[in-house]
Structures are given as C-alpha cells and as structure tokens.
Image (cartoon, rainbow, N blue to C red):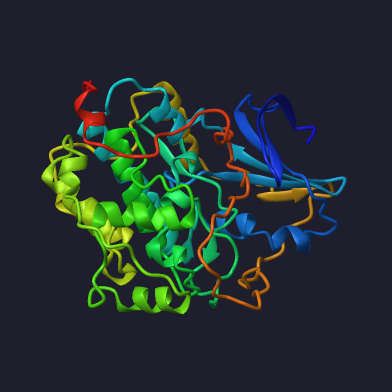
Amino acid sequence: MNRYTTMRQLGDGTYGSVLMGKSNESGELVAIKRMKRKFYSWDECMNLREVKSLKKLNHANVIKLKEVIRENDHLYFIFEYMKENLYQLMKDRNKLFPESVIRNIMYQILQGLAFIHKHGFFHRDMKPENLLCMGPELVKIADFGLARELRSQPPYTDYVSTRWYRAPEVLLRSSVYSSPIDVWAVGSIMAELYTLRPLFPGTSEVDEIFKICQVLGTPKKSDWPEGYQLASSMNFRFPQCVPINLKTLIPNASNEAIQLMTEMLNWDPKKRPTASQALKHQYFQVGQVLGPSSHHPELKQSLNKQVQPLESKPSLVDLESKPLPDINDQTVRQPQPKNSHQPLQSIQPPQNMSVQPAPKQPGQQKRPQTLFPSIVKTMPTV
C-alpha cells in the first residue's frame, strides 16, 4: 500500500470501508476498498465473489478493478475512481432529465449488463447506488459483492438485492432465479430516471409485492403459473389490483420508453428481454450518439486509460508480488436453511459496500413512499 496515499473516507459499511486515494507514481485518483475481516491466505481472497467476477470483466461500463493487495492479512481492492453514483445524481436534481439523457444512461447500463451476462455472471444487486457516474455522460456498474456465476447451481438461498429493485420471483422466495432479476431492476431504475422517484418503494416484502400489483395489476395464473406455485408454497395470495398504464405514472416518457419498461417489468422472468435484446429495442433506434462521451476532460482521460495496455505487474499482488493463481470457477455457496419457504416478512438489507460513494443511510433522506402522476407534472424539464 506504500504506492498509494489515502486522502479521505468515502464510505463505511458492514464488510469494509472505502477511501479516496492517489497513486504516488501517476497521481491518478483511485477508490480503495479495505475489507474489515482478515485474510490469511490468497485462497481466501480468491474465493470472494467480487474478485472472481471483476477479474474477468473489462468493459467501459463496468467498474475497473485495478489490483488487489494483501498486506498484513488485510485485503485492499484498488478501483478506478468515480465521483458520484446515480442515486446522488438524481437526488441533487431539481429538474427532470431530458429523455435523450435518460436514453444514454440506460444504453450504458444495458451495455454493461449485457457484457456481464455474456461473460457468465449476473449482478443480483442492481440499484442506483451501485451505478457509478461522472455526470450523466459516463455510467459504470459497480459493487459485485453479490454477483453469481450463471453456471453455478441453484438453489440460491442467501440475501439478494435491495427491496425496491427486487424481482417478484425473488420476493416469492424462488431459489432458481437468474439474470432476468437484473433486467427487472434495470426496468425499475429506468422508471426512476424519468420521475426521480422510486417506482416500487415497498416498506416490507409484503408491501413491495403490493406496490408492484398496484402498478402492474394482479398477475393472471395463466401468465405466470410458476409465480402462483411459489405463492401457494408459502400460503400467500396476490392482492387484487387493476393495472395502471405506465404512461399515466410517467407522462414525460415516450411511447417507446413505456414499451421497453413494460417489457422489462414483466411478472414472468422468462418473458423479460435479455439485456442484449433490450439494446435492440426501438427506444434506442434514434438519431443520437449513444455511449460514453469523449468531450468531457475527465471522461476522455478515463476512456483513454481503458485502451492503454496493462502494466507488466500482476493485476493482483501481495507484499511478495506473487503471481496470481488461476481462480477456479466454483462459486462460494451459502448453507441452505432448513425451511426454504418462509412467510413473507420485512428483511433489513445488509450494508453492502459500493465501490464509492456510500449509499444513503436510513436517517439521511426519506425517499417518497408512493408514486403519483403529479410528481412529474410539477417539475420542468431542462
């Protein structure tokens, strides 16, 4: 760690703290994630999901893990630095985003997600706090602490995703979910970009399903038989609700945007488009250059660094600079609870560390609990 100077703390959570740092050699800003537990061998480090996934992913819209350092049994992740996250970007606005800006943000999110899925992983915790930004021009997916390999075998029984962005199959305790849960979360994020308000702000798992039903309407058994089987196994009945047209809730969205959100927010995970399919949607077929902008100085520097060849140093090092052993593809498994079908109840999400900055804490800002058409009518666009 003597190659980096720490500058200030960016966040602190259950599993680690994040510091802003600077490379003593190049002067480049970095985000340093220091894990709180100790690691006594490289094997322990290599089994971390965040290392397993990010080591294999190199894309303009995925946060770059520059190296991992183990020093005095402490583990440090060195990430590229991004100044804010999408939640902060939305929170600090007093005007709605123009659709062209939202389209470019969504394009980058889906590009990163398609790359992650193509390389055999799904994220499991897509939310605005885990999308790091340099303004709306550059967006990168971060925090792979919950990521899983697509080829790892279910059942998946451990905690997954933040409630407001949690897919119905996860809320109903499915143990065989996969990459469509990320697509659902992205659909929820897209709606939030238009209104600056969460679409499904449930206060508990039961309330989350109720909020979804209020907007999408009660699913028909013929439309999602697996969902009814999941509900039946835990003695849950869907509330009876009439669907609301998303255009009523999000009047500033184009018809193409409404159509894409509707497809991504399908009750049945098998009927949701993949991230790659979503990128081919008519919503993106416009006369607009999409992707990271190269005009902003910070963005240009960031993009240039991505195409530079890697240094001869190993990408993950300890004090002895040992070569990195190959990471095997065996996913870390959590023990399966004896009773896998529990009644729906409120679950307090753990404070999973984002790369930076820190997610909001419960007492800092109360986000709205309902979504009404008036919230977009009273706010001017840029």
